[in-house]
Image (spheres, rainbow, N blue to C red):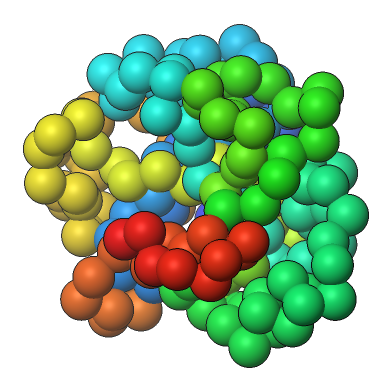
Length: 182
């Protein structure tokens, strides 16, 4: 049954839709990061400024490579220690990456997820997806499917499932310095 739901979510992403899906700690709001119209729609639904930038999640590192500059061995080692897992790293974005993904930065936030269902979603979709909290900006994030339906009733699809139980959002770290940002 889970495969069918994941296939539905992946089809929605491929058709430019906005979905919600469970992650390690909360439900994420996502879309195809290569579809600018979908990204703008996601930002509008969430009432989030494009200037902040967005997080991408992936099933494995290869799904992130089209978005990031080549990495030093030192940075690769930092990533390997924490991935897959709930650590988001700020990395240098490739020059052609949309401002809607990067915000006002030359960097992009990326994570290889340890959440089995989210990783399977990325595999079914065929790449990384946007992962921002499923809520209106400055409101509490959705932790259940019911929270999602209550706060964001007009999404194209909500993937049924459970969060992994982490009590805090993903940690965010600067890959250049290793310092924790969140």
